[in-house]
Image 1 (cartoon, rainbow, N blue to C red):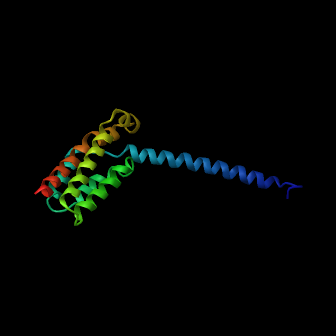
Image 2 (tube, rainbow, N blue to C red):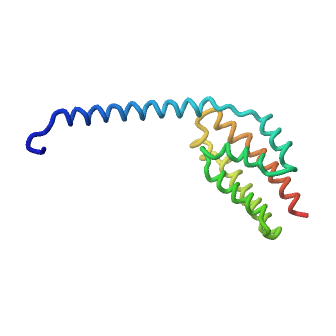
Image 3 (cartoon, rainbow, N blue to C red):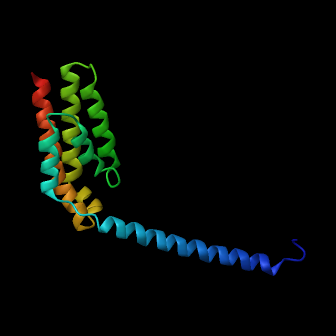
Length: 148
């Protein structure tokens, strides 16, 4: 095969490369279109927290899931905090988990360098501006519940 290279093989490889490049471009355009059409509404956030905070944590998980793609550390730490709150750990450990999560939210969404890196479009900026308020509001309610 090395002595008499098949021109069809090199043509097939070139065709495969072009197909892969087209697929990559099409996938990235679809991904960006899907991300850019996502709309957030602060009334929706308020309603989720208002209706669910007393009953269960699913509203918190719904809001937290909005961070999953862009800020995976917020999602992971929020889930970890929720697990600690649901566990049989003592009140001090629960309060520490809430405080650490609040600090991380405030740093991520408030630090100018982080905003510059992740606030590339209107929806990301809204997410970084409004959503922390609702998450912290929920955590304040949890803190009040566990401080007693």
